[in-house]
Image 1 (cartoon, one colour):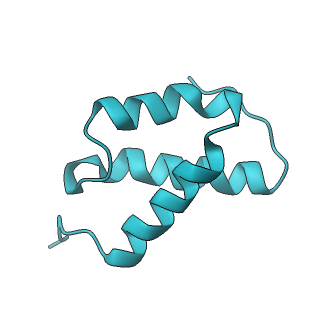
Image 2 (tube, one colour):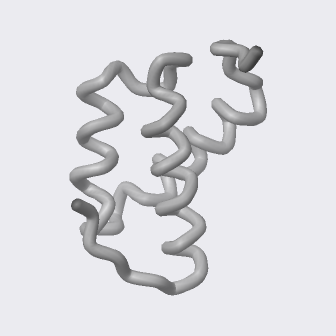
Length: 67
């Protein structure tokens, strides 16, 4: 059974990703979705994963178009 709990490291890295993506235009829709959904919360794990993935893309120099 999967846990709905968030690990501290998961929250911490998601917040670091959010901070790092603030000036990245293509991530605005994603960051807005997470914010409107209530931010870093157990029920937002899928969006939090997307934020961390987008951050890794950004760090790799990839520019994406968010849906």
